[in-house]
Length: 480
Image 1 (cartoon, one colour):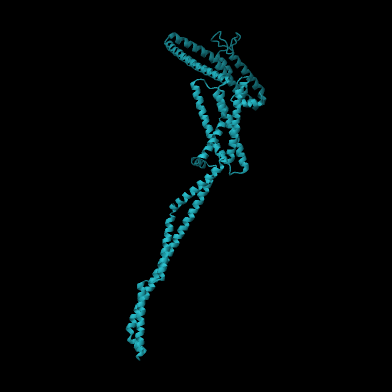
Image 2 (tube, one colour):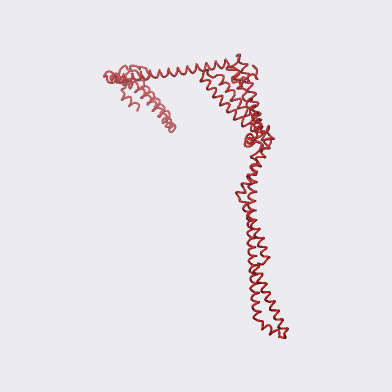
């Protein structure tokens, strides 16, 4: 088996050592070839998706993202698909095994559908570029139209324009009124002017009758005063009217200017809002947008049919390995692995049952032993035997503890001996001889049995010579 076949074998779910010399190697290699095709196709899909979704970045970054996505797609296929093939090929026979395999297949197909839906968002815009670009423009225009209407209602621009138009009409009327006097005021002025004309005629007539001008003026003084009062009142009415008309016109012009400023501010706010929303919509409603694609599929049956064909082809290629596996069926190697696994499960279950049985027997024996111990404690013979056993144990342990304590004490005193030898070098030899003698005597005491118990062996298992030795009290005095 060459290197290429080994890789195809691994992609088919098995290691080369497991299928070496098997008659099912051909089927496994074909399944591995299907996984290889799916991996190559997934690499292309993911690379295109990475390139498309990183459209606002630099070209070097886009190449890096596309390469990373391609590697990720290959890893996903090479990890999930061989394990799924191995699971299908080694599934347990029977209904339960088929149910587990079907559930795993549904999950795997769901993952493939999700991944394909993600990658298709980058591939389909390339294949439906014209349709998506036109539909994105149509959606932006429709939103712009509805947005303008909503903004007009929101900022009440129609009412503000109507207010400006009404004020403009009012200003025109006030301007006309300022240029034309009312009929009553005009009649008052005319009457005052007629009064002065009559006054002048009568005064001229008196002067023609050889009456001096002063006497004529004095004679018509009352009429002159009446005409003056009448003219003064008429002019005051005229001036008041013009002043009032100018004031009303000024107020109307101020209201119009204020309304125009408010309308201009409203237009600026609407323009800013429109520009902001248009920028967001331009970035959102693009040929790669999922919203545009969904709306296109809902409104354009031809585009939906084309999308379904493309998505079906993508999914068919990625499910190629599953189709090949369903065609080839379960291999002999898979059946053997499933049988061995079933045997191991049975062996484990039997071991668990045997352990439970052994534990039950141990609990029964332990309970019987406890009951026997409780019954034996009440017997005097058992108590006496236990006391003797404890006494012998303490007799054997006491010399060992004495030996351990003596050796520990000697180790601690050795440090003091070395310190005294360093402090008194002239007496170092004497101190060393005395210490050596003390150690030798302590060793003799440890290996000498107690005289009160003849025949007892020493701590180190050696019976000393039958020479007489001092009593324990004397030996302690000698050590001190």
